[in-house]
Each structure stands twice: as structure tokens, then as C-alpha cells.
Image (tube, rainbow, N blue to C red; front, side, top):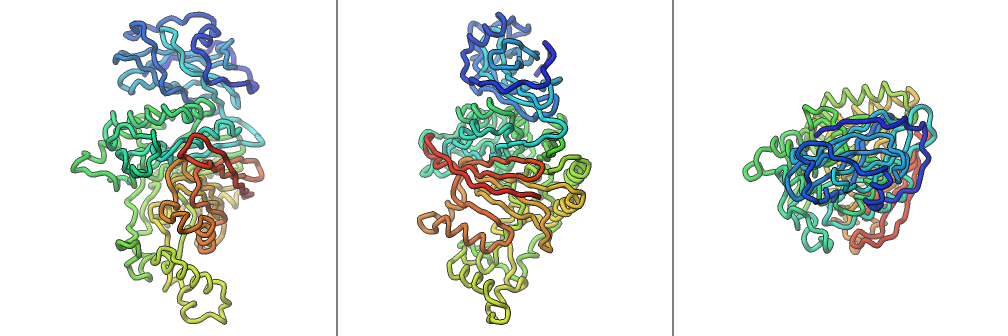
Length: 571
């Protein structure tokens, strides 16, 4: 994949926001560029009269103050490489092309093409496109660079868990007109399952069929699944509207992945885990607008982005590069804990790695050296202390066990019965997480991050975590073991994947009842929504971070409405 860049004219210091027409006519776009573009040479100069189909649109990502990644896919019916000209301009008409260069889409990269367009002006909006030798033109995309210096506000649209057969990507569609400047995707951008497995065929939305139909294991499989998502019109529009900063979770590989294997990987039938990781990571770097931090190690994708002096965003990998296998909750067929309750909090190795020592050291260095007011983590899994009493977990949140615990909690100490005292005794009835797949399974790794956050607070910096994975919405306090708050967490609901409503059907447990129960049981939860899909809008200013939970009314139809719940954190 070649990338030769030419700077056509000096970019203005600031380009005003213009109207954007994503479905611009290819012919009109070529005419506006100032004439017919010639071929670049090589085997792609002859396209047999065929158009170089840009079936998956365009995308941009990993913006810095002076550069941004541009992405597309170009393919004709044969396997011949396609040499492309990329262009950047101040407006969608491309009256003046500011930057241009050459890049090749070849079979070696699955016919994807990526450009690291450099020499750009900070805090500036650009339009971009790709043109093939026969003058077929890609859709037009809009991107922007990061700001420098003192800035008043940054607005991010945050997504996770976009399972194609589970429904329409209405969250992506809503975000296009949200006013967000940048998009973050915190993982599970694709899912690896065989069609009809997740969701089950009976719950699958009509017309939303996985491709390939089999579980994805090989390079060709992963490419086909990424292509399925990139072909979605709502996702194409989002990518064309704003740059996206991404991190992977487990489903870009296989469910519940760790360094040495995954829950959904069988070496006997699917080959080695190392080979599957290599295939998945290769395709991720091909199909996502990501700047690879280490070309020699595609499994390393943690990286930082500075938005002037306002915020530093640190994108973490809590799945592939450092995670050891999560501990087992030890449950029976009915989901009840079977271990001695007094033993449960200590039934696993608290020193298990999640980030790994190298990434942890990198994170500490990045946060301590940053001059920004806000230190924000882009993270896959819920970090807050979402812990429930064992007496409640053992009964799957039965009304009786919940009532007994909350009654004991509300009863003055002097009036408590011995049974109530036992319920509140952390040795007799400890609190543990409903899952150890998140940071709850790695308590010392979490406390290491929180200890670093406490130092930031002493230095006058603010700490915020953005999380995905759980499919539900959370606004959590982030606390040390002694209860001292060091930050806050906005954890987002999924784009389409089902949440707690699949375990506690609304017809059986009303969502408000379930949310209220969990919030009452867990001290560090400020807000929780257990059943709606959507995305988050995070607006950061020097004095506060505002989290807007934007819910779509449905994912089973492409016709929807939105509603919003809003919370703020001042640090």
C-alpha cells in the first residue's frame, strides 16, 4: 500500500464549517476538481472500462493536530490493484484542492487503502475523497484535526457493541446530526458469531443477516464481516461525517478473549489462537481508520490523543495484549453461587493482569506528563465497583432477598436483628460483581489505575473513564477501597446488542424496578438504564464533563425517535 503525498497549497489557519452533501454526484465532483485525472501507472492503469466501486464509502480516524488517517476500499471485478488519488479541500465542491497524493488498494490489504495525511492545520475541518484512474470518485467525507492550546469545549459521540443482526444502527444515524466533532468506538464494532447464534435466529431482525454465515476465523472471514458493517448506510454516513478513534474489545476476535485463548475459540477445530489473533488484528488494521502504533506488532493499539490543554484521551486495550484469563464466578445450573460466601471475594488471584505491566507503565507516564486538565480513558469494560451482596446474587435478585438486604441497610444499628447484622457483615455476606469479565475480576489492576487517578487529583487534574461492553448505561463514581472518589465513569449502552432486559424481561421485571434495585444495592452507581439502546454524547469543558445518554426508541426498525438523560461531573 503506497502513500505519496503532495501539498497543493498552504492550508488556511481555520476553515469555516460548510454544508456537507455526502451523496454528491461523482461526475460533478470530478468536474469541480478542475479536469480529468490521469492514471498513476502500474497494473491498475487499465480497468477495462469498469468503475472502481467504492462500496464501503470513506472514513477518517486517529486525528492529531497536524494529520489524520483517511480510508477507503476500491475494487473492480478482477484482482488487479487500483491506484487512487486522494484529495483534501476546504469545501465539498473541491474548488481548491489543498492536499493530494497517491495510494494503492491491492489484494494484499483486502483492497482497502489508508493514507496518513500530514502537514494539516490544527483545529481545522477538511473534506476528502478518492479518485480512480478512470475518474470514478468515492463519496465525499468530512474530517477535522485536533485543537492545540486553550480551548473551551470538545464534543464526542461514543459507541460500543454494534451487533449487525441484532438491529438497525440507528445510534450511528442519530449521531450524524448530533453536533459531535469526533466519534469514539470502544469495541465490539463487529461480532464473530455464526449467523443465528447471537442473537438467536428467533430474535434476529429481519433482513439483518451476518456474512459470512459461518463463524469468522480466517482473514477472508474477518474481511467479509467488516465489509458487512461498512456497507451499512448509517455507519457509512457516520464515518463520512466525522473522524473516529477506535479500540477493539473481544468480539473483533472472539468472545471473552484473553492473551492465551478465548471462551469462543476451539483450537481443535479453529486452529491456534495465535493464528486467529493474527488474522483478526491484520483485518482490523486494514478496515479501520486507525494509525498503527507499531507496524511490527499489530496487537499493540493503545495510544493517546491530546485535545489542546483541555483533555488527553488515552485509548486502552483491556482485552488482547495484557489480559490474563478472568476468574470463574463458580455458579450452578440455576446461576447460584455455590462457593462458601466467606471465600468468594478471595476465590481468585487479585494480582491478575488486565492492562499488563508495560501498558500500565505507559498509562501512568502519559497521564502524569500530560498538561491537559482532563485525563480521560477510552476503555472497553465497566470499571466502577458494581458489587452486589452474595445473598442477592445467590437468588438472582429475588424480591425477598433484595427486600431483606435493603431493610437491614435502612434499619438503625441498635434496632437490627442478628439476621440483619449478618446480612450487612462483609465477611458473612460479602459483595461481589455479577461478572468477573470486567474490572471486578482484576481488583489490583483497577486499584493501580485509581491510585494514579488520586495522584492526578492532587496535581489539579480531573479523571474520567468512558466504557462500553456491558450493553447498559451507567454513571458511576470511581472510588478507592476506602470510599474516596477519584473520578467518574460514563459507561454507554450498546448500539444494538441486548442488555439486562434479555435476562430480566421487562414484562417480568419492570425496567424502572430493576434499575432502582441495582442502584439501591450498589453505593457507587449514580445512574443506570438496563434496557435501552443508543450512544453517549460527552461534552468536556474546563469545568465539567457532561454525559448525554441518547436512547433510540427501537433497533428493530430504521424508523425511530430519540430521548436523552443527562448527567454532569465537575471533577
